Image: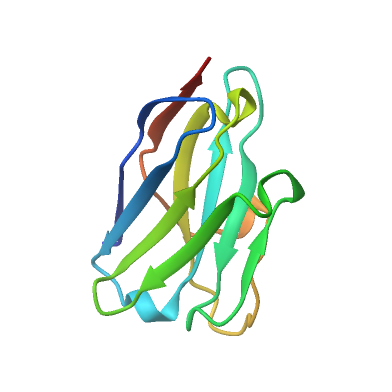
Length: 127
């Protein structure tokens, strides 16, 4: 059974940085495109960033471009989200997810297309 475990969330002041990690076990990590999503209270879960199996292609929502960087280490079965210049509106629970489609060669943004999810980690940005 594939399991995803996020870590690295916490409380940070606006303008600060955090690095989230997502460790994947129980599957072949290098076969998955990986995505990061977030969900603020009362809002839908939305795509933040994603990375293809090889790490060669990344995608970001416009609001985090230039501030967040997604990366992966296939030897460690881990995907990362480096978050810099954090803003109040970045406050949310952050989830990682794995897309196991064998035929898809690109990052998708729809939550329904991801097969496995982590439990989430809280990121709170304060003034």
